[in-house]
Length: 447
Image (cartoon, rainbow, N blue to C red; front, side, top):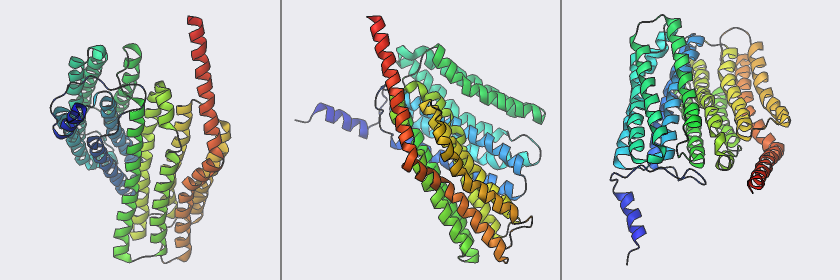
């Protein structure tokens, strides 16, 4: 006789009929990430790559600051839409037919937003706002399905109805305001201020809602896995960008010392940051103290942007080797800045997660940044002229810069494995003991 539980599980795998959104288990270990969530992540990482491609192109054209502004706007829109869906899916993701369809619609929105990126970067380079109707439409398409999903959850989960409705209303209002920023003719400074204020309000709203109304049944362990997997796939995009850039370079010029250094460094940077990121005990800590999830997830916003920007830096270096008019110092900046942001965010995320500001980690952070400072120094001493591959000194400077930048995550990993892990262990155990003591004191007071 077939076990009924086995039969029910098999039916759920084979037939995605409508199922109620009753909320997932909010405490303890989270459910496994679904194939749909992985597909969703892949689409959004492609959007990261598209933004990085535009950043590299505009920097190569000399529009550095406008490109950085447009890039930050694009990365925020992509990352925030992803975070909002992941928040809902952690609480209510039941993988039924309607949930799947509405998730795929969000992917369509990400693709639409990607088509708006070239316009955004070109507008910023021309002194105009990076906001444009195509990008906003894509962003709205990414967000509107969530309104339907939150309302569906409110109808089927009476316990969390108020907070679910609050999320639906908040997202609706935000989308109407985003649409106004794109269709109402405003001066560029006013539009930029409106974008910053609206983006900030979107990030503050969930914190206020969950503190005042109550939290939705999201699972901290599941979120830790989701964020870790997106970080992993984004690092994979760095490898893809390296291979694509160097592949195009070698087809035109053949293999050279600088091409070999570039591909090796791209792989080392990606692998080093993968190692360093997963040295942070996110899942273990968040499952024990889920209240730390909000600050931890916001720390990932600049982290996602810096990872994609590393890919842009590698593209810029390859373009310079191909003949783009860039100095060695400009190449050093394009590589060192995103790597520095990423290494800083790893330390900041550690501190936010553990609520510990262990000054013993400061020497390790400084040591990891030493190769970056050396890379910038080499670039500065290479002269103001553009990269000249016929000049052995210029080539040596370029290779030195690339190798030094790649050493940064290596220093971090080696330092943490040798020394830093003891401080992480001590910080987690100290927090555990303090929390355990408070719980015992509260229990004794209740008695």
